[in-house]
Length: 345
Image (cartoon, rainbow, N blue to C red; front, side):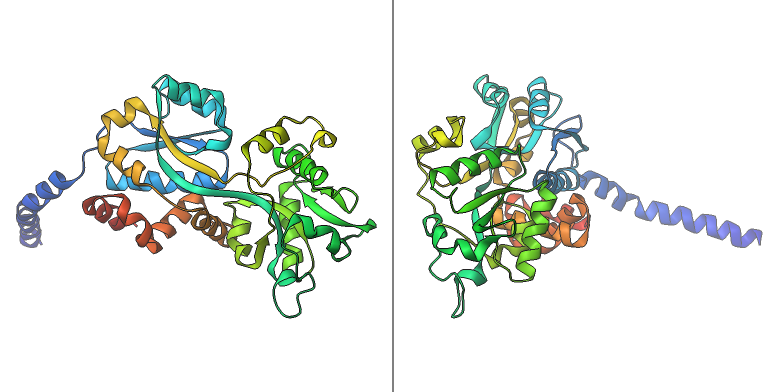
């Protein structure tokens, strides 16, 4: 028994000696993070940012060898944290409504716009495709908001049958205010009720239920979102007058819908990746990755639909994305970094 044990110890020692060069080699190949502290991300409180943050964190952690973290919160406090240097990276800065703290930070040279995450965030009024396309489409000819009065009976409001129903955002949301002004500007108040859903979830449920039952429904929505990822191919956005900045400003400034004389389509919004100037100066390789990080509204909507349908976390959706969409993300990083990320999946 003792001889067997001695042989086992000797064999283990020889094995350790034999593996020593390989261990030293693998340690030498392990990437050294460019910064000597955690890379902290802004954990903004909406799903698309959670998804992008999870994707970027996996690449920075597994591909570049850095420790990562995220601080949860809303836009203004987190951007203030970036200006102080507590947070290094933010994956979604919406250019249409950036807070003063962001623009001031950029002007002061403390914050930088690294690259464009996606350039096609959209908003608009939608109807199901089956209403307007096909031989038996009941609303054939409905293409624009200007056509809606001719089809109000199709969208009859159960509580006010002489009018159609427009599904607006919940009361108090910024989009609810804009849509109310648009209804007035387009002269639709006499033909459609301005139905404000109690919650975002209630709006989602009403839309999904109508589409699944192939019922008429007219509603506002925005993207990227899980709903557009799930139903987008079955929906058509109605035409509005082309976006005009002066008209949009007047629409935005109006205090009362009755004061609005004209409306315009929602602007297509560019969403950028941001970082602190101090961080990108210290981490040029990660800076290059964040600069290359590029998605689309449709891609993000599909990722959010995956989260919704499978009831998984943003990190699991990120893992699924990295495993299934190499055609998108391999171009963001050098091959060695991509190999390390793939090895950890």
